[in-house]
Structures are given as C-alpha cells and as structure tokens.
Amino acid sequence: MQFVTIKDGDFTNNKSGTFKHTDLIGQRYGAKVQATMGFCHVLKPSAELWTSSLPHRTQILYTPDISMITMRLCLKPGSVVVESGTGSGSLSHAMVRSIAPTGHLYTFDFHEERVAQAKSDFKTHAVDNMVTSTHRDVMGTGFGLTGVADAVFLDLPGPWEAVPSAKQALKAEGGLVCSFSPCIEQVQRTCQALRDEGFVELETLETLQKPCHTNSFEIPEAEFRTLEHFEAMEKERVELEAMEMNDRPPKQKMAKKPPPEMHTVLHTRTMDKLAGHTGYLTFARIYQT
Ligand SMILES: C[S@@+](CC[C@H](N)C(=O)[O-])C[C@H]1O[C@@H](n2cnc3c(N)ncnc32)[C@H](O)[C@@H]1O
Image (cartoon, rainbow, N blue to C red; front, side):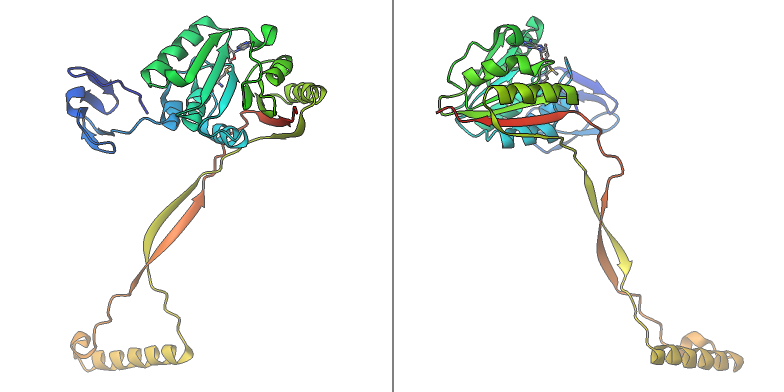
C-alpha cells in the first residue's frame, strides 16, 4: 500500500512498474489503472489506509487497537480528546475522523521533529483545523490543560506519571482515560496511579484480531441412493453386458446420463496466523462532580 500525492507530470515506480500520474488524475475512486508491469487501484484516503501506508517514525497503533480505543472512549462528533505521544500520528488520524467536524484533538509529543512532521501531515490531510499539536514532555510537565477533555489517551513509557495531569484535563463532569502499554508491569503501575487519583471501572484488555476468509466454489449436487437405486443400477449393468455380447453398440441403446446438477458452496476459513501481542489497553472512568 503506497500513499502517493499525485502531481501532473510525475511518475511513481514500484514492483508493478511505472505509473504516470497523468493517467491517475481524473480517475474515479476504485478504478483499476494499468502500469508497465501491473496495475493499481486508486483508493479514497481514509484513516485506515493512512495507518497501513504512513512512514513509520515510531511504533504505531493498528486498526484492531484503534477501533477498540475510539469505541471505548466513546469518541463522537464534537468530542474533545487529549493524546500523548503523537508518534507517527496513526491513532491521531482515526481520532480526528471520529470527532470531526466539531470536535478537537490536543496531541503532545516531546520529540520536536515528530511534532513538526505530524503538523505537516494534519495540514496535508486538511484536518489541521481540528488538531492542536504541541511539543511538550507530558510526563515531566503534564498537559497544561484544565477541564476541557471528554477523554485522554496515553501511549507513553511511563503513563502513570501523566495520570494526575490527565485527570486535570478532563471536564468537570468527568470522563474516560485509556492507556496503551506493551508490558504488564507498566499496566500494574498505571492501574495503581488511576486508583490513587479516584478513577473507577478499571478494565485491562488485549485486542487480538482473527481474520476469516470466505470463498465460494461449485460441487455436484449430492445423490443419496436407496437399495432400489442400486438394484436398478445393477440391472442396467447386466443389460449393458448382454447388449455388448450381442455386438450392439451400447451407446445407441442406452440413454446418456445427464450431467450432475452443480451446487454453490460457501466455505469460510479462519486464518492460521493470529497477529501477536501488541499491548494492553487499560480503560478507566472518573466522575468528578
Ligand atoms: C509509540 S509512540 C506513539 C505512537 C502513536 N500512538 C501512533 O499510533 O502513531 C510513543 C511516542 O511518545 C512520545 N513520548 C515518550 N515520552 C514522552 C513524554 N514524556 N512526553 C511526550 N511524549 C513522549 C515519543 O516521542 C513517541 O513519539
């Protein structure tokens, strides 16, 4: 999967050969476009496609975790959400899609270049009006936000350090927090910090996706035979033998059997490979009033 900005006169080369951008301009989304050694499909950009094609500047979150996060944090149009670290912006784009057009994402990272690149990506994807991207060490100095957020998401090496500041960033009526950590020891420290700050409904889970493939194929209709059926077949065989002995060509005497009726069968197979452990998601809620 390649994310390509199309420019009249440019070319893109990959294992399918050379694609002239001029041939791509004006194509409808979904169109199949021929190249010198293969073809491509022109797809409409989406948060999921960005996740599968973005340049990795860090480890990123993938669609199974992202869908669990956006759903369990109840993100919807108009939600205000705080995120750290921004990383490569994989989760940020999905969050923006969920909260658009009236919500806002405050995203923080202490790596200056990543913040600059994320800002540039948000602008290119025309979502920068819904994002504030800030260069800041949130484990050291917190988010610097008070009472604005419906939800806070933490993807940090020491999320427990940011829990008091996450609480402060949530709206007066309370809100939701999610923390992603690869190690169970990080989860334990984060849960302790969440309890200390008065968060409730703590739940930690791991999201594993098990893909299934469904195919269809044709098989002959099953023929269930009775004893009479076998007896009739035996009679037919004996008659055939007798005709052959009388030197008469059997084909002239016997009616040709019609071809069996075909039947479409759907077959679903779960894939053998299950993507391995990425991390644990800890969710919690606080009621502040
Ligand atoms: C694993 S990446 C986040 C990936 C992101 N969730 C995504 O889907 O693309 C973690 C990020 O946290 C940032 N980070 C680590 N410690 C931080 C801190 N104290 N304050 C702010 N950002 C921090 C790192 O610079 C890194 O970019």
